[in-house]
Amino acid sequence: MKKIALLIFSLAFSFALPTSVVAQSKALADVNNACGYEVIADCSGCHYGDISPTWEQTTYQTEGACAFCPEVASCSATPPTEAELLADARSTASDYFKSLFKSFIMAMKGTGMMNPDGSINNPNIFAEVFPRCPELGPEIASNFSRSTGYLVRRVTERTRNSRNIPDEWELKQLKQFVEMAADGDTRTQFDIPKPDGTILPTKEFESYAMVTEGKGNDTNSYFRYMRSITMPGMPSEAPFLPCLKCHGTYDQLGPGVADAVQTEYPHDLSMGYKKGDVRGAWTVKIPLDFRVHGK
Image: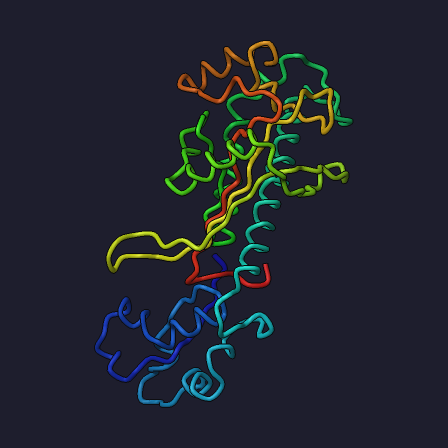
């Protein structure tokens, strides 16, 4: 999560309090909520020897929390709206998809089995990218989570990688997506830029909600978002994606894929899909206490 170094005013009695308690002061909470950034508190800025008041203390008292934001225009004293959170979550999911797609193609080209123009010169390419390929998703998700402060990942009921197991809320949405697909419900179109500059038009289901998690006094609020991942057709049909070569029925798998999967992921459940099936979902979990603005 983006952080700024901030010297923040704290009440006089906090001289005697440990740093962990000072960090919960109203002033610090005000800045966190207003700026949308997690703040590193350095109490020396407000309690510097016998010199008082300091610049930080005076600024906070006269100008408020927004004066400490690196971009004042992004500062808001009110919580983000649901529409803003939805737009942020959609953008994050699309960026994650775009990065994953690019990394997948680069991994295949890096093996020397895919030509620069995207054509394949080795029929065993899908088997030989293991185990690197299945690890790309969690790796990129981890990078996105660190840079945004959100929890970003993929989930599915039928896992290949155990890190993609859904939690209770995610599982409920996944089951709903499957029902919607079976009923032929209308999907939303999301245009994802491909590495070659062209657009990948995807049509998916989405779900979002404000969710409170935890029990008793130990609860946290989140904006949760999910977008389905639908299996495309074979690589020879638009949008020309190779997903079924690793996740399709046995007659659709690439040469050697079944054996490679068994070797690397003996408990794999992620094969046997067909065109139109919901494979899983992109999921974004935004803490409502700290939000990165202007993303």
